[in-house]
Length: 293
Image (cartoon, one colour):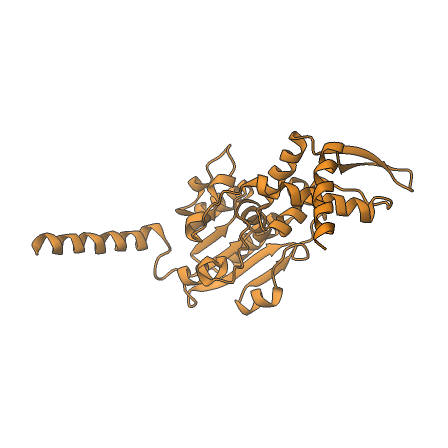
């Protein structure tokens, strides 16, 4: 009985220490800043996981509310180009999220740029003057651009907590060094990385390109890899990174290639297209469908 009591005491002490030093203090006033553009695309590309998930235990905003409490959060802001993110603004507002829309350059992937991180940093600094009662600043990002603001706030005597995705974090610097407490979003949201058998999607992916060529082959539209990646991600419900690997697989097997497409404007654009080998794989599938009909 004595050993059991000691064990229970140690567990309670450990929980108390973690609640006091590893996370915000009970009397902290908290400000939460989410680089939503960064977090959304990182989670979608790697896990096909929408941060505003319908399941409460996997919903980023609900989990943060649960962690920090309704009574202590003084501001809860999310920054993104919401025209390109598949999240309901009404739903976010119902969750008491302050939406900060920031225009992007209208591109995808690594070419996509906006100033959400700059807007976030400016607002965070401004809040130190507008509301001096805020003692804990929470940043949700996987971007090293947050390092200067986190460092500055630590110098100002503020507590800084960080939620990030370790596998997407910058390699040149350890962003966790600039916070009092850090936590991986994969663990926080209970994400599970799945293995996808890409061979299972080869036939359907070729069929998709074949149908696109028949519909748009004579138009000024051209088939780019970023657009095709997004279509495969939606069609097969796989992360964008896996969709990119699927496209690479088709290229390696010489089922698709790149052609130069002449547009009526006089421009020449590179466009993905089926190779003869790829087209031969599609034809039997089409014929078998017509026979069944």
